[in-house]
Image 1 (cartoon, helix red, strand yellow):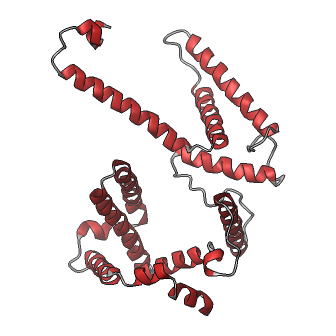
Image 2 (cartoon, rainbow, N blue to C red):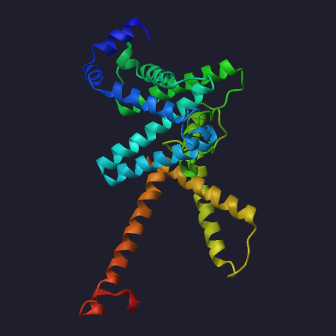
Image 3 (cartoon, rainbow, N blue to C red):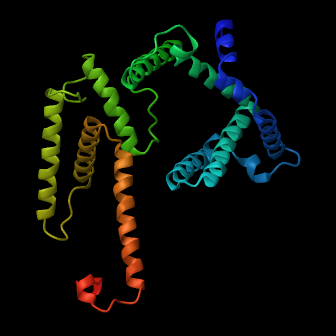
Length: 296
């Protein structure tokens, strides 16, 4: 971090308030507890057995529990779940420190550098973006430069999909792939029809074709004789292509496919639970008027 960046941060009112909070002693206590848990002499047997691979599923689970707490609106639960997620960061950092790779301080330094680098309009002399869209485009340019620098340092072949984890939920991963493909198509680096755009183009026409093909395949599947077995590879590809088409449509509409699917599933669960509660209650005097499930 340059001296100018340090001075600009130091004079930031938000940063000054953050520096006045008693977080440092609490973080130190957490790091000390983690060190104690991983102490070969007297540490916790379970914690001592963990490595990156074994602890990774717990990290993913804790992230989902944070999301669940946010959705519930329970701030006390959110505080607890954020603590659990922070512990996962500390745990993985401790394992890395024992391997001589990096420590928790290095993790913090890395994110501080990244945030400063990705906000040049705050910590440097860059012009302030005029809209959220301009901000997003600025971030993408910066991230593209970061990926290119990382590839150059490794001496590898440029990978336009670098940074998209295969372990992401399939819909979320497909949405990211669609976003990268759209940028590649606009730059003339992707096959026509693989990406999407906001205006009618060969890509959007291809999207309509995919959705139409998916509907036709559904009709054919529904007409299949009951009990008949379809070819599994064909079925997998059919479902995969159909899902990808809907993911691309969600991008055109500016909708997160994960949130969209989660939302309708939540509505279904709520309706079923509400119906179950209704069945548990004594029937009303005029059952046919109310429409009891037993009459249908």
